[in-house]
Image 1 (cartoon, rainbow, N blue to C red):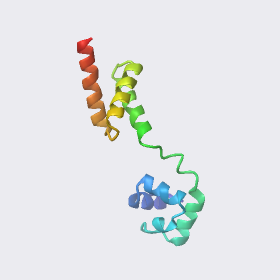
Image 2: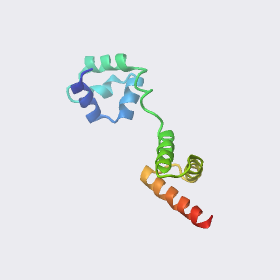
Image 3: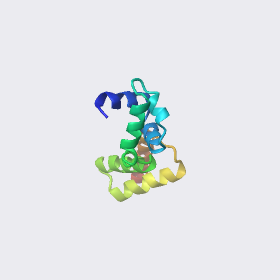
Image 4: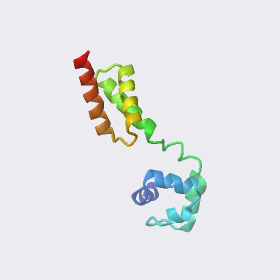
Length: 115
């Protein structure tokens, strides 16, 4: 697959949709991208099956890791950052990273003021 093919596929599908189509052998989904025909879509499925799923991670782990990393980079101890982020993720699972960081910082600042 060349760069034009990759751009055509990624302009039509999200990385998650592309991975699901390839892993599910759904060449029809890939063939809907501009410039991608049946034979090309089938070839993409054959060549990439089993390779893309390793690249697309589940969303919860990277969100947690990214939030902890950001807090550690701001100077908070990793254990304290991990505890706050884990507590927030237990309370609400569908955080966006900016909102999660904002709330984590509020709690960390509040705990520091109380302590």
